[in-house]
Structure formats: C-alpha cells, structure tokens
Length: 340
Image 1: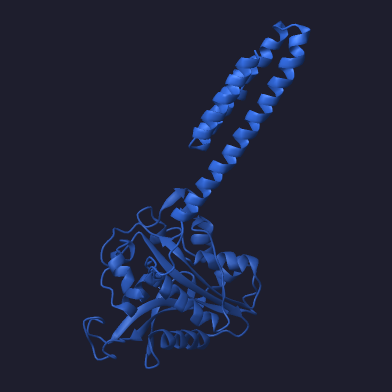
Image 2: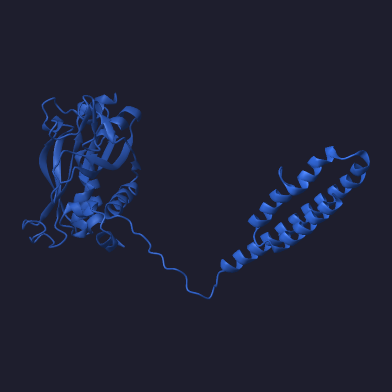
C-alpha cells in the first residue's frame, strides 16, 4: 500500500508539471482528488486494513493528499497568471497608432425644423404642451366644435381604432387637453406627430408633423395673433419676410385665416417655388371659438384667445428646398447628411 501511495504521488507530480492549461489542471484535480480519484480510492480501502496498517497508511495518504492539493493549487495559479499576462499583451493598446474613425450622425431635417420653430416661440414665453398620438374622438373633433358631418370625421380621412378612438389627425387635440387642465393665462405650443388617410405622393403622407399654438388671456385680439405670427415668420425665413392673412374657415376658430409669407426665393417677384404669385401659404390660424373655450369652463365674456397650426414638413420643404415629402421618410443617409 505504501508503494501504491508513492506511485500516485510520483504520477501526480509528473502530470501536474506537464499541465499546460487551467482546464488540464482541473482534470487532474478530479482524477486524483475527486470522488472517484486515485487518492480518494486509497481512503476507501482503509476500511479493509487492520489497525496497525491504518496507523501508517492513514498519515501517509493524508500527506500525499495535501501535497497533491498544494501542487495543483500552485500550478493553477501559475497558469492563470500566464494566461492573464498573455491576454494583457494581446490586448495592449499602441497609443501611437491612429484611432478608428467614427461617423457622427446628424439631426433629421424635421427635427431641426421643429426645434427651430419651438425655440422661436419659447423665446416669446410659450411653453411646450404634449398629448398622446392615440386620441379620443371628443378631443379630436367634438371638443374642437367640429360638426358631425365634417369631412375630416369620415373613415376616408381619419384612422379610426374604435368608434371613439382615433390616431390624431392634428395636434389641435392638445388644445382641448390644455383647456381642460389649465386656467388662463395660457400660452403653449404643441409639436407632434399626426396621421391621416392620405396616399403618399410628393406633397402628402399618411404620417406627418404639426406644431399647434394656443394663447388664452384677457384682451387677446386678432392684432396679437398677427403680430406673433409675423414675428415668427421673420425669425424663421428672414427679416425681410412679409406676411399676408386671407379669410378662411376652421370650425374651432372664428374669425379664421390662412397666413402666407412672401416668397423667400424670389422676394415676392414670382418664381417656380411660389407658383409665380410671390406668396407661399404656411399655416392656418384664427381666434379661438367660444364653444372651444367653454370645453375648459373658461369664461368667454372675460377671456379670448387665438390658435394656429402649421405643418412641419411644409415648413422644412420650403426652408430647405425639398421637392418631395417622401424624402423625409426614406431613411436615405445621402439625403439626411446634407443637413449637417
């Protein structure tokens, strides 16, 4: 038995010394010290020995077990250190080599336009109001004084999810939400995404963006509306920009108007961009209808207000000379990168 113990020790020393990886050492640990290991087998045989043999074999087996365990631990630490040093060497960075170039992305032109318009109005004291893209029919139509037979309520114009729920066709629904939750004075804009049942072409898209504006306070008049939008147009298109208001009809404003700006390409002389008449329509606006104010329980004898709404895509197309609205949604990097 003593000879067998010595043989196991010599075998363990030889194999541990030859081990090349931590995995090899772990296999040796199992082979010698595991449940079915060679040294473990010695201890299992102890029960068959007489008392005197146990006195000599027991200590010898324990000594070999401890020695093999120490050798394995020492070898494992040595191999792990070598592997770490090799990894450090492989992963070392040569700071003299040029770094990898990374392309910096650019903002989308619609984002640029929305941020620019928002900054202009925020400089006038407006705050940002937000609303959900999935809206109630009341907030989209009824609360905005739209009659039941209004064309925009048709299935051919608005995306209905249920009878009472739609994808909002305009950000004007934020007007209703704001009037319900805030009391005058109110001065907000609401940029956001909208949806309509439009077939995509050069000037139409089923998804688009709008910026809605709402002001409610005592003594608000059409002059305040015209002065505000005239200032916005000059900051957006240039200080020489002129504005023109034409009578129109919207169910949620009375009186209502559409605003044109002088063509910033030809200066009003007439060109291809403005269709030869020197003016370009950019938004709709008007004084908030009393029926809309009453949705928020606002005293229409005391307060008046104005509202406006503009299409972000239209502003961006005019400002940057984009001829097809579909270019905004095709994710073509060659197009987007022009707006650095």
